[in-house]
Length: 568
Image 1 (tube, one colour):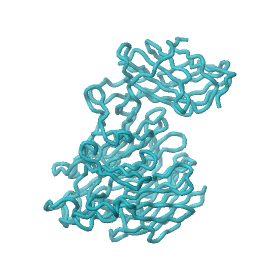
Image 2: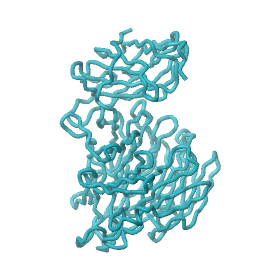
Image 3: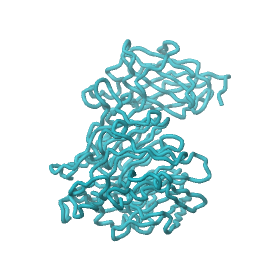
Image 4: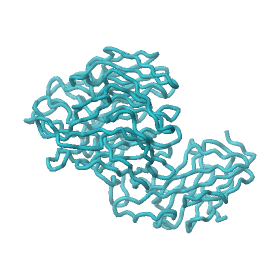
């Protein structure tokens, strides 16, 4: 609800880390913005940014204030950005849940280079609302100010209530493997750290109880993080014994206590509480509300896929676990799931894809299931599109999936763990271009053709939904590489899904496609409160990475100003 009785004004913009003490409350209230500029644009698009100064490649900036639904309240343009100078915008009504945005550019070019946004801003009568905003390159990747304290891959990164991201576990060491075929062993860490979006820095925290990678994680509403299952020592291999059923290139050789425990990690107190659970590895996590996590399928101690689900409910200090036997049509491990039901729906519905090998090279088998969770019970069924379409499907592992529209689920990348759609000898689990769009309202699935699918084959990549039918797909291994330490080569490429176009495309920055600073796979990608995506860690195929970067999905198109703003 917006009150017309009081107006606010933006009177201070600070480019430094100093406090905004000069901004005092005025009639109607005001906003005090502290702007932090990310470390540098990537590649040759800009030079590293000196701390505490506006970006060197802009001479004009624009501040806009809007309602959360998009209605603009005010938008002003300022020239000659400088540190420690106050700028005024009058006419902001007292309101809550506002969006404040920044665009920096060169006058006359009308293309935004640096963007920032703060969501959920509240302006109160006779009070100063202090807002921190991280600026990064519009429609591009920008390195974070700080790096990870521990290099890690196949870790988790969870966005907690205060807007920070908590990074837990993963693998931080590699060594020569003891496999019968060439492989490298990956050794897990229990380390923890937190990313502060205001400063752009990572702060090391006390470790978890047990080292683990390949685990599931879910942020709880009280800033704690639930961590479940995983592996202590894994192997990554590029050659396989069975030429028809090679399986996954990523395997767990020493599950240790990781697979037998869940932990509730508290980043505020830097403490962790562990609970024993049934053996859990390569299970597919599905969040159920804000305090329940459903884990479907997985593998047992022998490495065989299982038909089981675990429901974990966290209520304060209460840890409750329900074991559901045989809820699926097929045993599955390392399957992919996306919830497609809407918020507030009584039942949670999800599409579960893959997690099993094709029974024949020409037959994908029952490669997908539709899951319905309601009142702590789970039921499943094979979709009509699986039963009716012959010879086409997704018997995949390690793909990624995202809800990209009402009832629409995007599935892309991964590998075939068994021979499918190929008579190659030997058959190898290569990263896939494969992309499909499921429409659950119509009970249909379309496997996209070459012009609309992923341009780069990927496995151990990320897929991050960004609202309005869009998603960012980034990184992953793109091929086997015998010269790489881990026998696989990662990509730095990123692709943009638009549900309106039902196709992937590249985002362009000048004459170059937007790409990451490093080739990386097994990284994390976390959508932050300002709608940027924090991409952290992973491996390039030779080293575990400490680098991190932000992808800013904001358009480079300038908002239309109402009039020029004033220096105060």
